Length: 102
Image 1 (cartoon, rainbow, N blue to C red):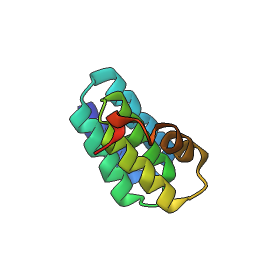
Image 2: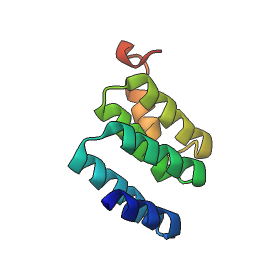
Image 3: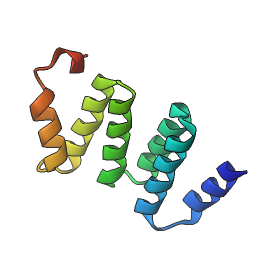
Image 4: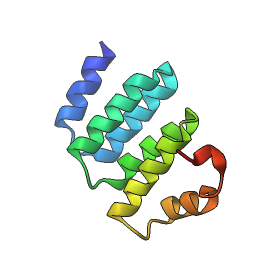
């Protein structure tokens, strides 16, 4: 039942940070990476310029040790905001690390 409540909340809420928080809390509670990834990707499709959505997805990818995908997602952050300190720090720190290569 809570999935339907989450869906309704996502569809009708204007508070984008609250939506991201719910997605993260749901993942932390259920550890369902597929649902969390799908929810974040849907959030990004509906809010393509909302940087926090990309950062949340990138952090999930790091947690799941999907390093090339994390790099790609942080790169998308830089396409929106080339001066984003979190993305610049991550990319700059890890660009020479072999586990982050495709």
